[in-house]
Length: 256
Ligand SMILES: Nc1ncnc2c1ncn2[C@@H]1O[C@H](COP(=O)(O)OP(=O)(O)O)[C@@H](O)[C@H]1O
Ligand SMILES: CC(=O)N[C@@H](CCC(=O)OP(=O)(O)O)C(=O)O
Image (tube, rainbow, N blue to C red; front, side):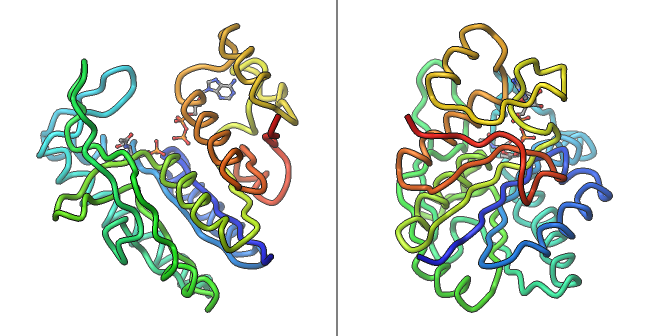
């Protein structure tokens, strides 16, 4: 099977032009077939503030009402995505920027309201990577924004870590996929405040134990849930690392 590297880059890296440029330079140098997924939560919050639109969060999760959906569509599908595509083109990479509506590659349903109404947030129900496969085989690099659609005309906001895991699972039918989560820390840390405490290899039982002890918390919990879901559904390897570790290093997740 041919190898494919799928890199997800988070909001802090995307927000700062220097770190984004550094990441894209290193990404451009990765050999073989590749896909980039980007977040941009911080950029959306900043743009909402500039537009006088209040950002509402519950337990660290964005509430996407109609006004916020317009902001995230502009920021994720436009500003962030097209900037990345243009910068990759400048590095000689033939990139194409897409939401889940483009080529109908990722379909979702609006999250049902239980205790909390998250608004226009999509839970992924179907992934169609056949057209993307043809593109990557022609050395085109898809740049995927954290937006999905419901196939009835509604765009939905979907977490970028989930988009990356679901796309990686979809591509695993055709390729040996390595999923790399690139964020601001050098890996999953034994102590979130100590950058020298990187855990080199982590299985699901180890994750759960560190979650119970409180060493793994907040945004790292859904990132690891997405990672282990990807491994259980055929993704060859998942790594969590920073820009410097894009090629190797950080935390490698292992199946039980
Ligand atoms: N044990 C841990 N190791 C590393 N980061 C951790 C850990 N526990 C919690 N975190 C937090 O998880 C956050 C990463 O999640 P998130 O902000 O969602 O990532 P992203 O930048 O990819 O969007 C980090 O900023 C860090 O503060
Ligand atoms: C539904 C949901 O969580 N959407 C995220 C999408 C962006 C994202 O995931 O960005 P980071 O990777 O930078 O966190 C949000 O709007 O914040």
